[in-house]
Length: 279
Image: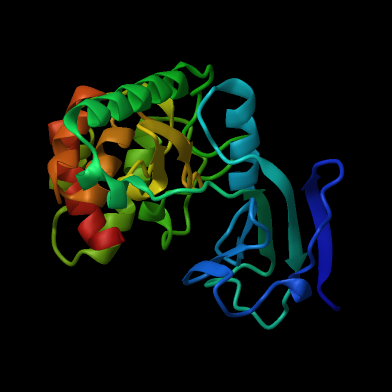
């Protein structure tokens, strides 16, 4: 069967661009890694697509635009294209997903941070604190996973067959322990179990990749937060440990999240051990 295009989201008056019409190379492609490409299709629109892109991200962006004032890209359209019968389902999806969204113009915070004075840095962090507060105020959190009872999209379980959704933090911890112990050669299960189950946590909506490369400032204010593909309901420490895992104290950014989210130092230590094996 030939691949088919199935539209999931389409704003009025937005003219769809088919996969065949997208450029395969050249300056329009602004990101390409693994199963994800981002291509600029107009001065104001980009498309994120590939076999490692999920429709859950488009749904999450629409959800956040409705329930918060967080500056997320507006989704113009989203569709899937496939199936591709020659793909191995274990390693790649049978369908590609295409998400057309606003282009956030400007340099990301990882490039701009060193150019900002202390007053501007403090203002940016205050805005991020407000946005995180809005995320954590979203009602729900009765399970751990992505929107609409979807699976955990975090890369920590990417290579593990059981991705949820999980009914509780304990169920998530059990999956993490199983994944770790299946990959790490040694009698480590009692130790990992003790570390992961030392504390109980509430569940909040979480970006799960809040690093400077996903934050765009302009004129001293945050104008865009991108890459919500791993977002969902997670234990309360998840935002903190993920932010520090990604950035690793490359400059004074590493001190700033301590002022906008509650630190979880013990959870950060175990997360470092988990990600060293699972990612």
